[in-house]
Picture 1 (spheres, rainbow, N blue to C red):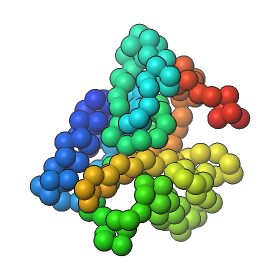
Picture 2: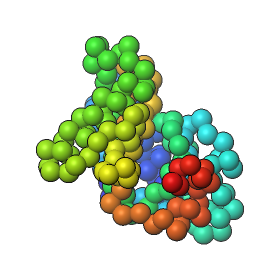
Picture 3: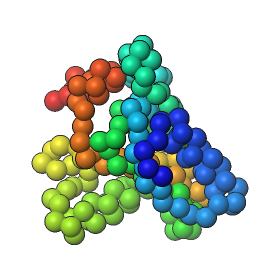
Length: 172
């Protein structure tokens, strides 16, 4: 769906997921990019994770994802995707961490077949030489699964550090 603001991308995910849960939408995969956006997980407290005033002062959208997980800064330097699918019966007993492991493993295997020396770091990241290149987040309802994926093609570290309240241990 191209380059959109965080509110538009979030609204598309919410709308399509609600339709999917009701059985009114088919499985789908959507690729997109973001205008500058701070995205927080479903259960996070925004002012603990983000520098809200900085976001507002600099025109950075703040959105709450349907999926859990940590806060992320998104801009056009990341390729994002949302996968909506009906869970196969064999996976319906899996918790979200197990589902993330299945999809991270599949993505790592696909990238390895392309010659990229990537490894899955449990539960939801992909790394090359200890550096994160991708992360996945998930949400489920009824028999529907929503997966958010972010592939870091480029990173504006300066802005990311200004937007996110990053714990010191993560910086190392």
